[in-house]
Amino acid sequence: MFLTKEAIHLLLKVSSYRSEVVKSNLRNAFPSLLPYQVDNLAHKFYAYFSRLLYEIYLMLSGKLEKDNVNSLSRLYNVSDILYFLKKGQSVFLMVPHYGNWELGGWSLALEQPFKVIAVYKPLSNKTFDRKIYDTRARWGTLPVPMESIVKYVIKYRNEPAVFVFIADQNPTHLEACYWTNFMGKPVPVFWGPEKLARKFNIPVFWAHAQPMTDSTQEIFFSPIATNPAQTSEGYITASFMNRLEKLLKSVPPYWLWSHRRWKHSHKFNPEIHKFVIV
Image (cartoon, rainbow, N blue to C red):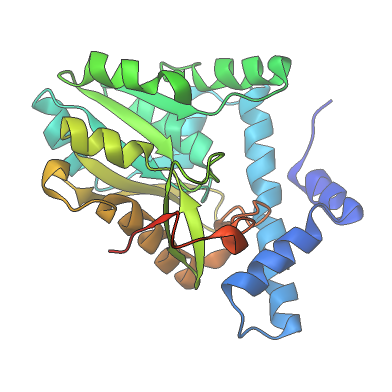
């Protein structure tokens, strides 16, 4: 069966897929919006979400070739990252669920010569998890489970490799993470990328995929900390979330609003949790 973007959009609309979660998230993030404005923003999200799911379907089904990837997803201002890689150093990319992060990983692996290591959380469905793994690995990306990442960082810390962390996910253990302010509310954030970067002094960059109106996207990079060992604790993590907040306030529809990012906010306890700011 060959799906279309329009068919996916219709299915999402008929099923009201996570509509209450999406609108609740939008109200959390933008409390000053009127109900019709929330509805309008939700509509724009679902329009893009249909495109995202369609692109991921094409990726999973093997219907995208290298030329398609290179034309759909283009790298910009990547020179700072290449500077460190060409010196034989690894770099960390902290990436949000914004734009098509999966397609962005493919374009990164295809458009530069260095190894790309994608850190991921394995899915409970083993069949689908294997499909996702094989899709990510199709053109040279090495998918690595979270629990194995320390071993790979040690292995490649003195070699040029790009480690990609999807950094806006919800941690499982709320004590073993940082907390920071995000869109006016406390949220837990994985501290793994920062702790590894500071320990091994691996440069950290922000990266996000910015969708364009013609079904293409542009991948933008900017440094968070090029000398992480000299940064204060929590700076890298809080900086990432601060940049994400600014991006959402500027162009909100392209984030994964169906993801319940504030579901733990009410659990924040300043006596237990470590709160960090920029």
